[in-house]
Image (cartoon, rainbow, N blue to C red):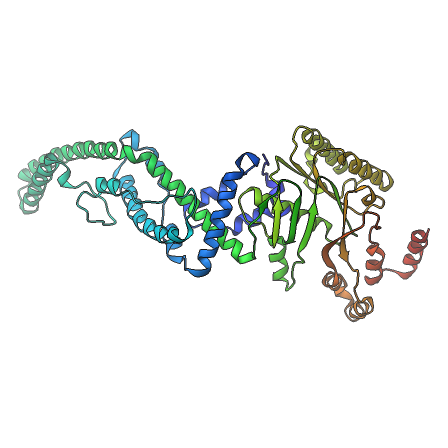
Length: 486
């Protein structure tokens, strides 16, 4: 099963996606915190989750869900109280919160029944607990308060009557000696009342005991409903698609990464959607630095994670296999605490991944700029060796690299479009007018989309063009060109 970890979540933008899921209730929030990761043994459950999200998205397009979301927002976490019912020791506050929950549940159940008549959601059942509410509200007043009713016990009724009579006498009595006698009597009666109330609270808990598991089940259902509503809203906001579970390769069209897109939009820019197919073997993404290879790789990782966590992928179309393992090898994810260089750390991580892949048939391996921290000649040889080894293994792998003569060994080759097709004269003219904003202007013209090309296609040579656009010393560039021409 794919394991989520903080570094991975942060790097690919998955943490941002989780933050975007606006759950309303403590139960939905808990469901979000404890994400379920689905593998091929739980495909049927995952398919049901996707069905529910799709149905709710359609419903939201035609109906306002504000009321049921507002009611979910009013729920408090009573799992501790429900779990303690069998101790027979719930206090008045806990019984009040339980009663309040049951009253809220009646309203939510009505809203859910109306919604579910259209949606027909799977594995979510929300119904009122009328009998349990009658235990805590024997008079049927349905008030948002709780106190032990005198009707629960003749003894309690008699004690409270006697206590009331004594309190009436106390208010009238002026003689201090007789007042002291009445106060002692009141203390005795109060102790009797406390004892009887303790007995009655235990009795109420005993009556609630048969409903304990049902209450825990409906709490879980409320969490599932809340989490489904949140996922549907997120999918509508970003135009996500319902994925298909593939038995073969990985296919993602029109992918975006919300963490990057949202940051770009704040600067008045937009994210270029990415499309890719990757089958068993090796897919290589090439392009110059600044070209968006890492963004493309992280976007693939993000959307694969979303599918495995029952969140619609941020794509127009998605076919995703259920992987047992997902590995992301990147220099900035290595642990430097062990004293290894970044190169040594990433090679150790790669070695561990390769050993693990041999034990699992369904793995996705993503490698970002392997061996860029070592000698370029050796680094290129290492990457070529890795590509050729991966072709012999049962794994879907995607690598980014700027090294030459790597893609020719791969099964598929994608290139970042970069500055291809850009009107260089127009860009040069703009930079000449505003030299201080040259980097920002190049970014605006840079096309971060990727296109599939022949595996024999050369790695794009945008680096020199970028240097020229940045106005790097012309004498230096003359020397650089001499070596490039060689």
